[in-house]
Amino acid sequence: MEFKLKYKDIDETWELPESYTINDLLDDLELSGQSLVCKQNGELVIEETEIQPDDEIHLIQIIYGG
Image 1: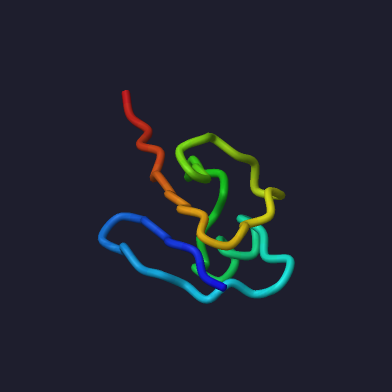
Image 2: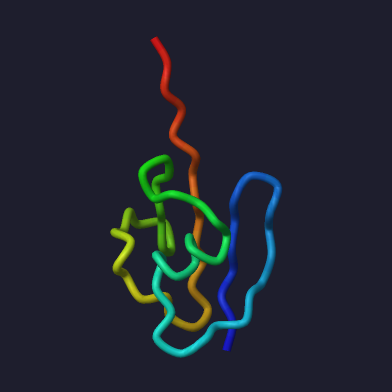
């Protein structure tokens, strides 16, 4: 089973481990959820959300400024 990941220049299909969450993905990518917005199939989700087969996960970097 697989899911699609989009983040910056990454547009890849990943193998889906059992019981894999957004938080697991962020850990694997060494990213912090505090600086990202996570979408699953176009809907905003929290880090505890489990990724399902054929999902499209889009990680969006939050930009701070003033």
